[in-house]
Image 1 (cartoon, one colour):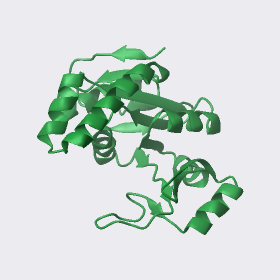
Image 2 (cartoon, rainbow, N blue to C red; image 1 turned 45 degrees about the vertical axis):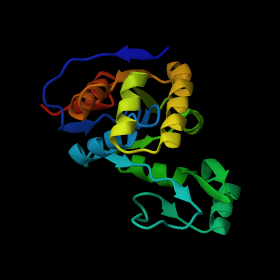
Image 3 (spheres, rainbow, N blue to C red; image 1 turned 90 degrees about the vertical axis):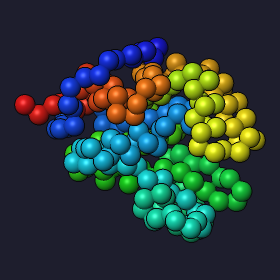
Image 4 (cartoon, one colour; image 1 turned 180 degrees about the vertical axis):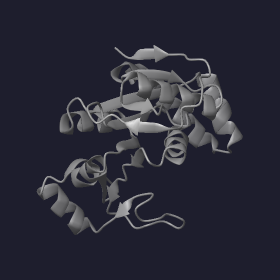
Length: 211
């Protein structure tokens, strides 16, 4: 059962050292518009020595403004299929004729550096990671009220059809949130939510505050 976390603001927790004996992959999940990507980027920014982002692979063309190795690792469809045959890609989907998925050697490389691998993904991705890395995955589900999500989607200028689709996704995501290890309220500021996540990482022994 997921642990509901509601934590008041805590002290400075930006300096960490890794504890190699515990879980090493942190997943941020939640409904569309909740701020998953912002959370991952915030953790990477304040702890670059501790965290490294898991960058998925895709066979689609790079879009304007996207960066190889940052947004995705862009490879050919043939190369992606070779990764599948060699069982290097352990989770993937095919959408509109192109592939997208996570590559095990890339994650192994992060872990070999002694870093914590971090990514935002859905329940399917979490389940695939749990199978590939038993007892190494910590999943955190960000949540807020449906009203708050609607407000955020409106304020950022999403089209009505996109807002309706994301609100429908919100209802679906709320039904599966108990499959994650922790549920963290993200109604307040991003800084406060980052501190809640930091507190969880310390509590789980994934990272420790430097003395």
